[in-house]
Image (cartoon, rainbow, N blue to C red; front, top):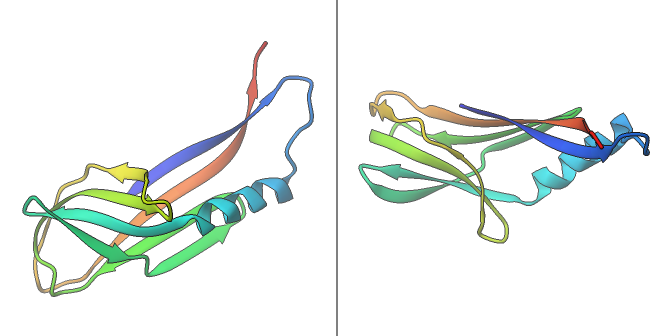
Length: 116
């Protein structure tokens, strides 16, 4: 559902972040994520994170909403362990009660060179 690029900014002519460093940063970000909230017919509800995956510099976070959840779902938010909103997705989904829904947040960490 949501794809974001998280820049790791370095100054030109300074040290570069190694691939292992980027992967460790992805693991660190993954470790601070707590749960997902969303609105169902304008009421805010909470869902646990059902799966986490870090593959290289990419972080995948999944929340599964089973077939008991139905209605107009919107304002999906990924919440950190400190209670802060880490990421949002404004997509609106009209979910029937006949199917589950897998909500995915995807982030890619990229090193970005900062010009002088």
